[in-house]
Image 1 (cartoon, rainbow, N blue to C red):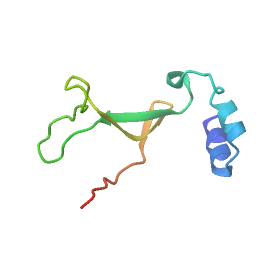
Image 2 (cartoon, rainbow, N blue to C red):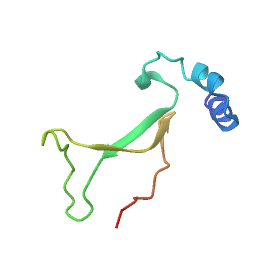
Image 3 (tube, one colour):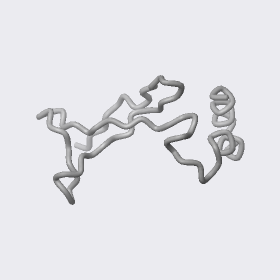
Length: 82
């Protein structure tokens, strides 16, 4: 089924993709392919970043996807404005 989901996404057939993922109202945590997040870390200090609104809210960044017990990291670059 995961292969069919990838094929639908590659072809741009979003109706099929959405249906295979469980539908519009299906819980994200129960979908066949889930987004994979990691805590955002300041590379200079090694400290986990927090929200500008609350020091207790730890920030997460999207790193890739998880499916079938495997994680695939798709976002390897880190962009900086200078």
